[in-house]
Length: 131
Image (cartoon, rainbow, N blue to C red):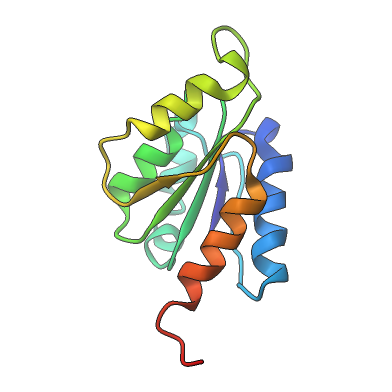
């Protein structure tokens, strides 16, 4: 599953989704499910909890990965984006939030690294498959 907090995160989320698909993963997209409207995320709980791996793409404060990490038992790949206003510091604010998450099972890639997240998700999806 690839989730984006807002529509401004779509470019990075699509890069992650298309990368994972290119390498053979089936991808569900849940876009514009950020924590400022948490009901949008919670309405997708069945999809989230059935995922083998989730990519959470968020700018601003980057809280999406922590919230998802607290709701699921699969790995979450957090991708901070350089979008945002105020004191987002071109993604550094989201990066620091994601790195400092107290939720278990979260790994963080660099700012705007949708490709890296998609590739790692594919490797996680392949775990346990016979070669």
